[in-house]
Length: 117
Image (cartoon, rainbow, N blue to C red):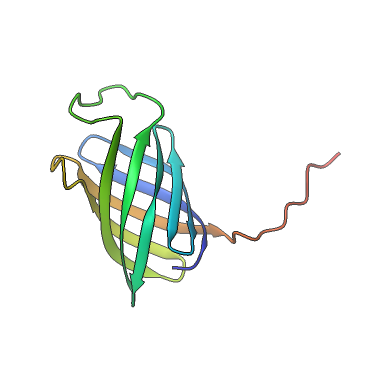
């Protein structure tokens, strides 16, 4: 996957949500309506593996009490130039398990043209 902005969609047994991901030279930064995420990833051919720390910024209705404010997820999956499909899981809390997709939105170095007057 190339560096840039991606639409994030992830799903677990108790949550399905979307957000935005930035991939930048092996680092990942993301946010959705409940969590801020940051981590590292590495390419091996068309495979990507990594670790991501989730930090909850907003409580959500129906959230399980066993889910801490901050936790780590492992990710592993396949990617193309502008798309990735991953399995995600929490080694410390086996109940937290799901899938994620990253879909291309744009370049990191896009030029900002300002607001129209």
